[in-house]
Image (tube, rainbow, N blue to C red; front, side):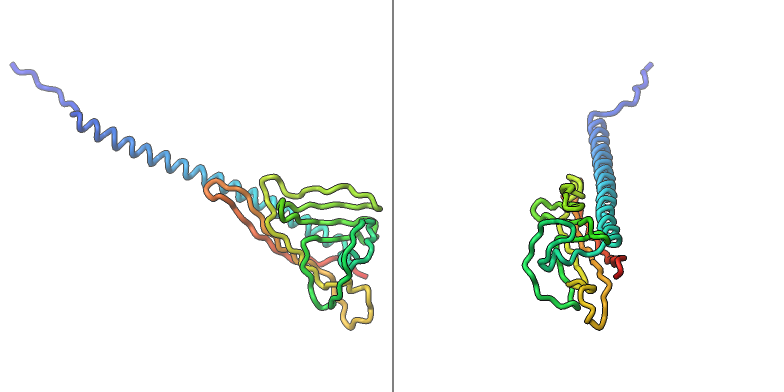
Length: 204
């Protein structure tokens, strides 16, 4: 009486099965890593947006609550007590000026607020000078966030309240154009550009 042979896998079948399984595992790991990196970039994008918006909101709020310190731009002495000297310029009230430093002063002229962009360090800082005493510069962006471009477009160029002989009076406003970057995972660098225009609430 012959014994029935039990079915078994051949060596070739085992090699094929292991190869298919290895390829499947490779695809699964690759898909997981891609998803994980994309998720990390999404978190980085969210962080980039939140930090950038926080800086823009601070600039906007400060501009609304204070007035533009035109003396610092036209070469006059600052009422806020800062020792800033500039070359006098001849300008037209109907034009706008583009600056990388924003000088503001409180309505009672007791405090000067200065926002400075350092293009080499890619940082944006604020300094507050109260009654001639500086509180020191505070960097607004984190170590990971870089401020790659800043432009403060100030309109009008000179103080519209300084000379009442003009036929029209302009309410001062500032347009902010800022670019930010942050290192990503899938992309080497994530970038964001924000712009807005804010009118000073100071009236005279």
